[in-house]
Amino acid sequence: MNHRLVANVLGKVMLIEALLMIFPLFVGIYYRENTYLNYLLPMAGLTAAGTALSLIKIKDRSIYAKEGFVIVALAWIIMSLVGATCFVIGGEIPNYIDAFFETVSGFTTTGASILNNVETLSKSGMFWRLFTHWIGGMGVLVFVLAVIPASGSGAMHIFKAESPGPSSSKLVGKIRNTAQILYGIYVIMTLIETILLCTGGLNLYESLLNSFSTAGTGGFGTHNGSIAYYNSVYVEMVIAVFMFLFGVNFNVYYLFIIGNFSKAFRNREFLTYFAIVVVSTLIIAINILGMCADFSAALRYSFFQVTSISSTTGFATADFNTWPALSKGILLVLTVVGACGGSTGGGMKVSRVIVLCKSGAADIKRMINPRAVITVKNEGSALTSETEQNVRSYFILYMLFVVAVTLLVSLDAYSGGDILSNFSATLACIGNVGPGLNLVGPASSYAGYNWFSKLSLSFAMLAGRLELFPIIILFTPRTWKK
Image (cartoon, rainbow, N blue to C red; front, side, top):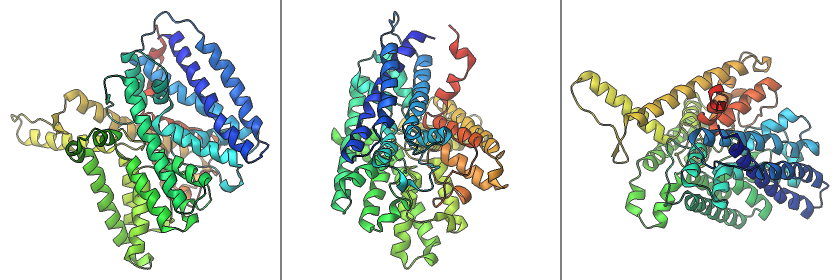
């Protein structure tokens, strides 16, 4: 392990987080709030520590896979630990464990909250809370790669460790240019949504914050009623469409940019994701028809909630806790499946589900005809046995994490023996979705869990956002051997 290099890169991350805190600081100044110390104190600490670490002399600048995973895992943990102090210093969330849970939920774009009344937050506190969604959506290390030169192979290890999905590839020759293209698409889409929401009657502040939450597929809202507060079909549809769009692999948008439309529309993962959303919306709309005024209303609520859960955003316009079992079951499945790889969404990822289904079908064919040579293909290319094995390993680890965290959370007396609440809370956190069922439904919060459960779920959120492996490698003793 190249400890000096790891410390040096983490120093740069600290400096960038300090720089990002300028935005909520200016919001507080603009609205004449007495919240400047909430951000100045963490900024001072980050600047001092970051400068010291950045000045460490490095002999070997090579970043290997091990260093890449460790840098990414530690960066997200440090950012969450320090980011939480912005809420504690001003007393907006006085309990540090609660503030840490809220901040982890923000950076990992989960949207699970311990706040029962979000409207009591200051303007700057609300801005920081939702801004963490936007920062975490694309990834802070991807931003580092976009603005700071790094060696090609080393940068690729960091990019792969942070980017969601079973595989991460460069769009262009240099990884830095790839990061810049991704962030360019991200910023432009965020601005377009902000403009559309302003057109729909929202002020600039709320339009921007809701766009932050949508872009990062996070789910934190500016009001207790989430998006239902606005009671506007236009606002709901704009956000629903953009939730779906941010759940699409950004490589598809790059194909559109370069004019390769045929390849973009033939993307198997995108087509599957689109089909999942359409079919789920229709089934749920029919299922909840008796609870709505007419089919158009049922379709409206269904489409919004399906895009919200499938993209792992977590916004709500209805309390789906009261929906029939079939609808809740579909939403639970969507929680596991999640969005596309290479998007800002979470979950298992549609691409992995496709590979798992194709590999399972191939295994059955081999059992029927052992002598047959069967090749598993995805996106027109044959999958290597290593890729299939990696996807299966990820699925097994994902399920083991779900079981382990569910049992840990079940130690909490708050659950009242309600295993569905604990199970759905774990799925929602590791899938970075936010709301679960029963006690953690869209009309409730995670405030009732004790400190141990909140830390367990925070760990699940970090593990889910970083696709398990960086967190596992970070806590593996062998990682730290020379």
